[in-house]
Length: 119
Image (cartoon, rainbow, N blue to C red; front, side, top):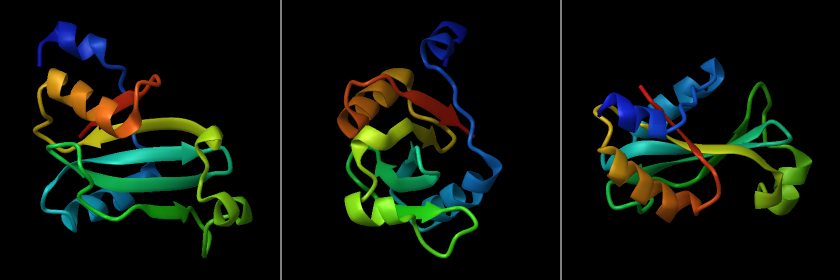
């Protein structure tokens, strides 16, 4: 990826507590080339592996750090889109080319502003 292409994609870093979940999802998803990370305003997270064609490569996992289960609001609305504070795809290295990242991001996350992250 060229320096110009890197500047085209905002970089987001995994929080320390998210890293283990992402690694576990990728380990259990041999077809996964990245993990979609959706952060909600309540502190819960939704994550799932994504395959090279933009299709799911794992089930969606919802969790809340340091809690036995997700919050009551997420239990009621399954982490409604209106409560999303940040969403991005964390790409496994080697990350796909930028144009492919953008195409997969649009397919998975839609055209709302998103961010990307790599190992």
